Length: 409
Image 1 (cartoon, rainbow, N blue to C red):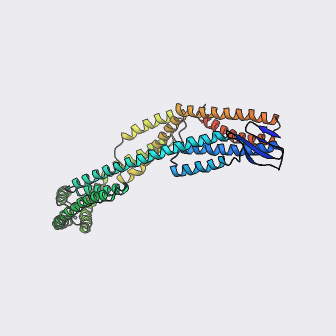
Image 2 (cartoon, rainbow, N blue to C red):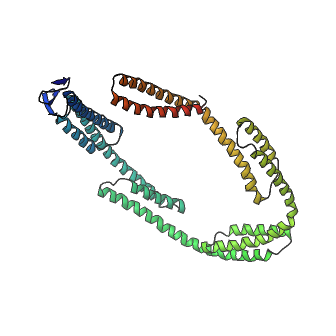
Image 3 (cartoon, one colour):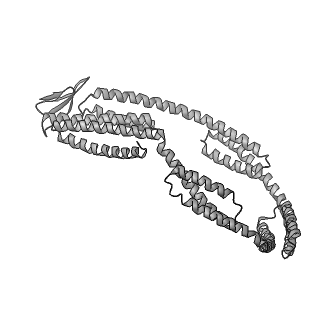
């Protein structure tokens, strides 16, 4: 016969577990030695402990529902009550009782919270109704309309109240939206009339602009175009289907005139072309700073280049994005190098990396000790398991040490 503090195996192979109510039959074992029988049923007990640990952790750290938690507790309780394991079953049963009390407390808390949320939803909907009724008188058509649409989305996201209260509040909410829509419709009907008047005025302005497009009287004609532009702005917008076409004609007439003037003024562009050439040389000089190997030197050199850049005048408009883009690319590369340097020298990140490396080193040392002990005891199964775990921890330690080296530590 074989035994331990929580169970025994009699000569007939029957396995018993000791409980506060006396010994209970666990099962019969005929496949090996009594010690193997006890070890088998102790592993089953260990499995129940692990399941209980996990369930306690889920109840504590997740939003597991009371229904699911209770079902899981009862499932474990059935296994404990079945006495098919060797270990402190009374302690497990007590833990499950405590956990059941915790779940019931959480159930009551959720019930109270749901009641509170319902009251909060009522208050929120009353506020939505009050705001909608205020917006119903607004003349800020776009902003108020968008806000009312947003309020509808907010309303839909709130829980329903009891049917009577919800219907009454929705009726007021819907009425406010309808009142706003009627006022907005009347406003835009009036606006359509104004836009038709604007269309007629802009038709005349287009005719004048097109008549001036062939003028070579640069100064007075340019001034006249500016006057026409002021009149255009003062005329207001025409209907959408006319506005773009009228503007294209108006703008096209101006472009004909100003293009002709630009050709006459081409000599002015020579200075800008020279400026462009100088800026291209500076961009090429800045690009030689890449890749950034000495941040301080690159930063100082770029500052000097940038000062010379700022002293140069305008360049042709069509060439500006490209040449400025080259300088911006160098500037971004230096900024990225600065950010990388900051990250590399960040003491908090260095401390976290060092802490993690230390923890992993301690774990590896501990596993080495446990492995040596298992090998000395001839426990090959445990040694194999420890070897696999050590291999994984060592890989993590190597990776952590590599990361720490990037901080120069």
